[in-house]
Length: 138
Image (cartoon, rainbow, N blue to C red):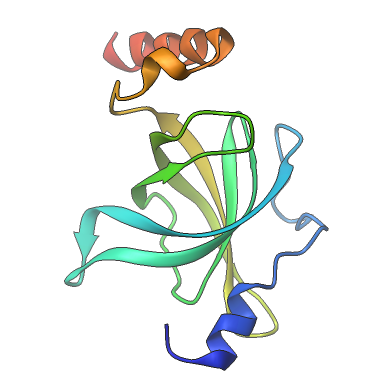
């Protein structure tokens, strides 16, 4: 990170969703700093530090110091409360500049590219993951 000012901007998760980008599912607040692994890496950067703000079964919201293009894919390993950590693949749905200069990013869940820790997943998550994989491969 680039210093204390940037850290303040990245912690700026808003409780209010951006009306320009309607949500398909209710989000659960979840505050955690983590690293995204860009797929493919862009302009020599393969990792990006972000502040996760919330999640749902179909998406993830976070704040970034760097703008991301719609369609950019990334993997992230997250462990929401009361769930096993898992690697997940997401695709950026929107990226909007905030008043403080940081970016509010919404990403859509694509799949779980790894079966690591799948035995620890709740049954409903396993069913959803398998359904998504079948749909993508057909």
